[in-house]
Every structure is written in C-alpha cells, then in structure tokens.
Amino acid sequence: KAKRLWGGRFAEGPSQTMERINASISVDKRLYLQDIRGSQAHAAMLARQGILTADDAKKIIAGLEQVRAEIEAGQMQWSESLEDIHTHVEMRLKELIGEAAGRLHTARSRNDQVATDLRLWVMDACREIDGALLNFQRALVNRAEEHLGVIMPGYTHLQRAQPVLLSHHLLAYVEMAWRDRARLADCLGRAAVLPLGAAALAGTSFALDPASVADELGFGGVFANSLDAVSDRDFAAEFLFALGLIQVHLSRMAEELVLWSSMEFGFISLSDAFATGSSIMPQKKNPDAAELVRGKTGRVLGDLISLLTVLKGLPLAYNKDLQEDKEPVFDAFDTVLDSLLVMAPMVETMHVHAERMELAVHHGFLNATELADYLAARGVPFRVAHEVSGKAVRLAEERVCTLEELSGEDHARLCEGLEVELDDGLKQALDPGRAVDRRISPGGTARQNVEAALKEARKRLWP
Ligand code: ARG
Image 1: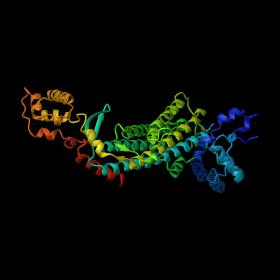
Image 2 (image 1 turned 90 degrees about the vertical axis):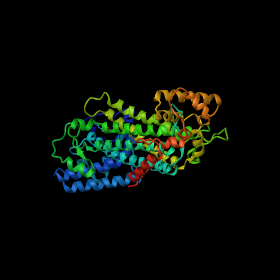
Image 3 (image 1 turned 90 degrees about the horizontal axis):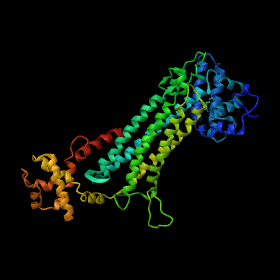
Image 4 (image 1 turned 30 degrees about the horizontal axis):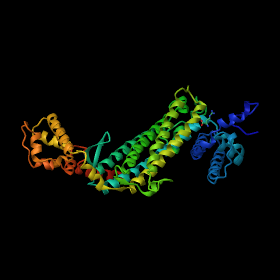
C-alpha cells in the first residue's frame, strides 16, 4: 500500500484513474529546487522560533540537500502514487533521516507550500526571459547599426507608404522589447510576495516569522491575508500575459521575416541554419523557424486563457483546480524562451539585400507625400496639395513612370491655377533619401534621429 500524506482517515485507497488524474508529478517535478529551498528556509525559521530543535532543523536541511543531489543525479524514484513534488521530497527525506522529517511540515500546508514554490519559479523565470529579451535587443541594435543608411519602404495596409530606414524599423522591435521587460519586472515584483505561513487557509497557531523566510528566499514582502495567499494566482496570470505579448511581438516580426525572405519581397535571405527544404521541390528554402515562432503563438495565448479559465469560478480559498496552473506556465515559458533563442540568431545571421530594399522605395510613389508637402510648404493648403499630388500619381501611372520622371511642364500643368512657384527644390523633394532625412520630428525616421536612438540604445543595452 502506497504511503500518503493524508492516509489517516481513509479506509481505502484511490481508484487507479483517480490516482492518475490526481498525480501532478510529471509536471511539477520542475519545482524540486524551489520546493527544497522553501523547505530549508521554513525549517531554519522554525528552529529560530524555537518550534523545532536546532538538531532536527540541521538534519532536515542536510537531508533536503541530499534529496536535491539525488534528483539532480537522476536517482529519484518518481511514482504517481506519491502525487506531487512536495510528497516525493518529504517521503524521500523521511527515508533518509527518519522521524525528524515528520516535523518539517509543522505550521505549513501544501497549499502555502505550492504557492511559494510556484512564485519562486516564476521569479526565476522572469529573470531568465528578461535576459533572453536583452540578447534579442542587442541583436537588433547590432544589425541596425551595421545597416544604418539602408532605406526601405515603410508600409501601411502592407502597401508601400513612405521610405524609412531599415534601422528605424528594427528599432521599433527594440521598443516593444523594452515594454516587455518592464512588464516582466512588474510581474516579478508582485510574484515576490511570500505566501508561506498562510498554512492551509487560515494561518497557524505557531509563532512564525515569515519576514525572515521572505528575506532568505529573496521575496520582497509577505502576504497580508491568508485566504488570498493560498488562492492567489494573479502573478501566474500576469506572467502568462507578459509572455503572450512577447510572443505576439515575436510573431509579428516572424511574419515580416517570412514576407521579406519571399521572392516577392527579396529583402533578406535567412541563414540555412533556420530554414528547411522540401522533400519534393528541390529549389525550396522555407523560413520554418520564423513560421514556428508565429505558429507557437497559438499555444502561448492558449496557456493564458487556460489559466484564466481555471481561476474564473473558484471560491476561496485553495481548490484542487489550482493544480492545473503549472502546465500552462511551464509550457508558455519554454515556448517563449525557445522563440527568443531562435529569433535573436536569426536576426543576427540574416543577409540584408539593401539594393532590393532601395529599389522597392523607387516604385509605388512613396514620395507622393513629399510632393504634397513641397506644395504645402509653399503656401498651398495641404488638402489641395494632396489632390494635386494624387493627380500626379495618376498621370505617372498612365505613363508608367515615376513622379520624378514627370517633366517640368507636367508639374506646371498639374499646378495650374495655384499660386505657387515651382523650383529646383521639387526634384530634391522627391528624392527618397531626403524624404527620410526630413523626418526629423521626435521619433521620426530621419538619420540623425535614428543615430541618436542607436547611441541611446547602446548605452542602455551595454551599460
Ligand atoms: N499538487 C498540489 C498543487 O499543485 C499541491 C497542493 C495540494 N493541496 C491539497 N490540499 N491537496 O496544487
């Protein structure tokens, strides 16, 4: 008969199916380190408070150290009948040190224990994702510096709109990543509240000192309400939202890499390391890594919805439903981390076809706004200037030429009836490079702005 932590009041064991759906060990064994750290801090505190003898605490802490070593050496015997990581660790501890192990759970429940473990795990995970985001930002900034001066079409509605610098485009993703990192930091702050000491739901009669445990484990504070402490998973939901948005940002970039590497765009070639071929079409080089990042967004967003749905109908305080919180958290973490780990080198190694980008800027009338602005700067009301420029586009379309290829007479005729002197400035105004450099409004794509932004980014990312 299997040993259970709650066997006392039961005459019979659980059915096989019950045992299977009740077991979370295949998922929550990932919490072993957090579980052991938490238990060691708890035992040390119990001893400081005179609740455990110093001798028992010493045995417990050393025994837990051995359990950790065994798990890391792959020697732990995992078994569904032992339900979860907490039971496994405690049962093994008992085998190792005997009776003293039974005192570890004084003034504690698995309810505050699991909440502590998961918070510790999420805190570490926030830091790890933050580091991966930093690397991703660095990759983007390196490429943006390297290609400063490369002009490409900026798009709205995926129609060529106005010329922008490739570096400006890449820096847009750096901005998203700053916000992502701020969200993670915020999430970490709220995760770093210790629930240990809430016990099952009501607190405990033992005189605990949770603040010292919080200190030891790196928490910033201690729970205020025991019912909330054991049932709150807001930190996990926030973490999943932060991850979801990171993945959405990556997915948008992945979509662009897919488009840009197509023959239709021809803006980049991806390194072979992030592509695959076709089993039938020998010429194919498919941007699989980018597609997978885009595709995996579905599961990360699913993870967020999954947890929110678990939470939505739960009465206070702990309910076993909460055991379902870990799988989405782990899955989203693994997926987002891998996505960051593949996107950064994909950006680092992609080959940029600057000439194709610049060629694209010259087709599609991306300088139509320049013509309108030129006229507006010379006193023509912008709405009228817009109309004139639109007519110029139509004329050029008929002639199958560009705006700059229209003749001086064409432009004069288009402006007939308007009080405006056309001069040499018109030709210059239509030049895409100058169009970029005129965009000096704060945050605009002018080279001087982008240079300053890159300098700033370098300072922040390589302090
Ligand atoms: N494995 C459980 C979980 O993940 C631990 C807490 C179990 N508590 C209980 N009262 N059954 O939520």
